[in-house]
Length: 331
Image 1 (cartoon, one colour):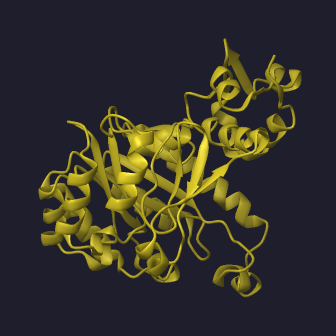
Image 2 (tube, one colour; image 1 turned 30 degrees about the horizontal axis):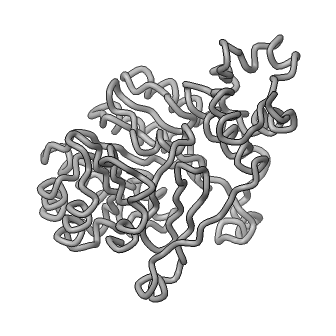
């Protein structure tokens, strides 16, 4: 990873303002190895340094080690504090362990703690989800990432869909749980700043905002993806052994229409909305919202910024798709 960074750093002058150890397994690494990577990357003073944590295989001592090497933000993959729901998700940790690592992180004093919550899990009731929200609201973290389970065909849930009794009613349940989460989280001061992310003031995830705002980043490690300032994508091999031999990524030129669709879909998710000038600068394309969307208030336009109406956030993917149909060369 350090070799890859040394090759990529020419594209990224200055010191990084965020470093994110992602994937769920960084907490399994020897903290001294993560410290070596941090020393090589040399983030700026006050940079956000995040690590994803798997509650089931991490004790308070290891969490303290992460804090000691400079990690100031942890993202805890709790998913649910309810034992039955955690078992249904086949997580490697128990609901009790999820609560224990959350409590330990609070005591250690990380500058920012994020908790992942999952909803619309087969067999999960609104009451189950309300109990998860009760835990969060009783002792709020600075950030919550909310994930509605989507059933894909070639997955264990997808293959068991009929047996689990999943139906169109699940869509109504999904919406009920999502709306409940928005109401409860915003009531305790965690504002929705992206479709699935809620933060207290000053605690938005700086790193993820980079992705959502279509800004450049370096992706280091097997399977990592990056986005260079010249708008080219980098992609590392997913196989670990070949990556160790040659960590240099494949560099890809992204077709303008594909890049524009990605930018529309990601930036419209964010409360700051879609910057049409930025879209044109990156892709040479722009769009105009349909008159009916503007008239109904589905989207609003302020100068060169398009934003989606708060009540239409749950149908954002459909809105983004319709907008992408109107992509045209910028004049």
